[in-house]
Image (tube, rainbow, N blue to C red; front, top):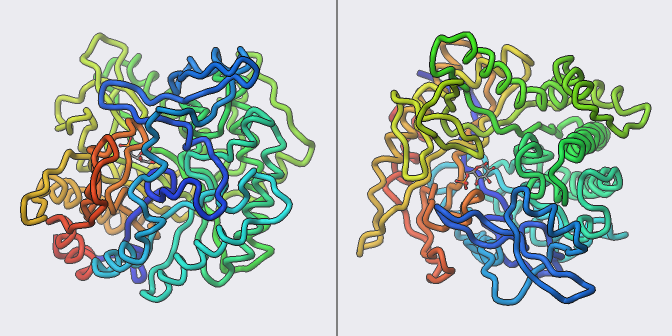
Length: 491
Ligand code: BGP
């Protein structure tokens, strides 16, 4: 067992689930600010207001949204709704304490996201918000103090709300210009402090949750195809700008990827799995591979989807493909054409895999998922990989003395670190780093719950927003510290 020299061990977070301070320091509103809490059984909602009639309401993050918006409603913050992201677990006021905890665990890297609306409150303001720039300067200085390399996602499930009101979100090419101005501004401003950037978190979620992924106010196939295309072009232009700013800066793609299994050896199940793979991998074929794959072009032809493009788009995609490919991977999904018990996962439904155990949210733990994922992605693109999300959600119980005995999390992580080790040492995959998701407890993206916790550090806050926000170390904190100190040997 050995990890490459300089392997970046660490943890991951996202502003919309962690940062809070939603109106502090001159920040503007973003899409995440109008998404309410949900629960294990109730989906999260987008709140809206009709500026003409004054009527307010909420609608599911799925297909309902388009209906409300067609009637002239705009997503907006309304009185009486509870929005967990407004405070989240308050990194805004706890960053020094949190980064010190990361240092104590031995983090080499910290994945976080920058809130676009903190830098450009309306998404496309003439000049950036100085207070916003200063906040992240302080965060990166704190990281530098401890030798922690930041990995920054430019847009993690949030788009400035003004761009949604004005343009209807990412299906409009105007968002490309706004984003590239934002990415160029911050890459220049933080030159020397931030080397690694990701453009869009889980870009493939455009197919499933286009409001989260791109502030899109419609859910039809044409809108989603255009939204994704515009984000690809914006990503390519960001790679171009990065390389002009400094040779040191690397811009990665971020994909939600996990292995898909066929439930049976029925060839129909194999075809189903191939199609499921295509529905994810076309995103990395374009952004990391540099080209739309034929199977996607054929699908667009069949469905009558026509993209609005500029002549230089395809050359840009090819010339400025991502420098590396990062991905989230929590387990695996299983599919079949036959009747079977439903399963659950990271925004992907499949069927229950009888060989795997699941947590309370139905997500399956798969001891080989990382090795399988790394091999598929490395074989396909031969570019360096970075596992930027992996972990297990659990309703942890804090004891009276502040301890949390999360052995289930340690077991999960042990198996996953081994799987990653296999990918490196048995298969020769080039892996840059590993950032465990939600290293300090934060709000769940899928359900909006606080009790679906992932962290090494427990944060005192409940589903209704009560709690002192006090931090305490779980057993997994000490385990991860040992894992990093021994470079993955002492598990
Ligand atoms: C990914 C997202 C994260 C994160 C994670 C866990 O899809 O990039 O934002 O939240 O999944 O999902 P959840 O919070 O729904 O448990």
